[in-house]
Image (cartoon, rainbow, N blue to C red):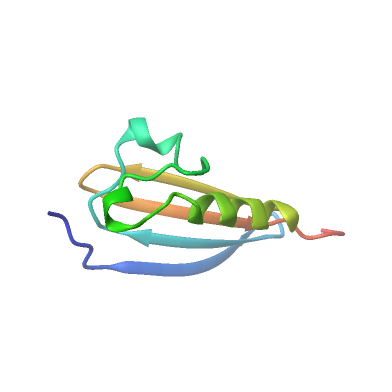
Length: 90
């Protein structure tokens, strides 16, 4: 089993767009699952009581505020989550 020993949270601004970046060095997410991460009821942990609603809700809420979320991951290397906050009147 993998366990993440480091989580890095940072904020940067690119072309006047604030970006929240959360990065870990954990197990990573297999490529074939990455396209399903934001799908309603998608989970790999149903037996542990997870229902696959969380990331769907996060993306929906961010969309309501004109923000974007993306996840990139490499197995055995880690995962990077980026949230871009698109501001009115840039």
